[in-house]
Length: 147
Image 1 (cartoon, rainbow, N blue to C red):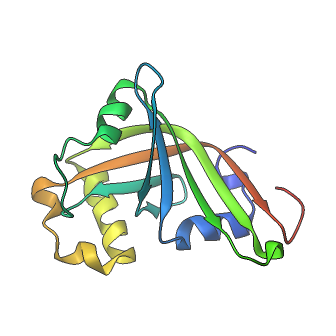
Image 2: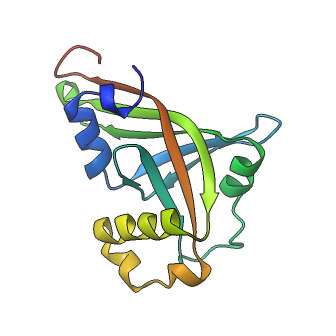
């Protein structure tokens, strides 16, 4: 399956509504990193902010990885003891880092609309947003054939 326009409607809904995803990046040597992230989806790209939660540094490894190697992916899934309810959507693409400009401002607006916690954070001043463009979307759910 290719970019979001060809993904099934239920998969796009999962990307819009999921509260958490797992972001995968890798450095120039290919060492992987997988972290849970809050994110917003605008139909073409996913946005995740480096927010005010306690961190050792604001120059997170995921950001350094994207600067070295723009290939990244994000997975959202539904897991249930009733395996007829299982589903997942994987977005594979290329990422960049935003810290100013119209795209940065729009990303913050999307994130604040989805997460009330971001509405009180001064992300314009100190924030950084990782943007993941979807090159390919893979989706599967138990309730129907793989998409």
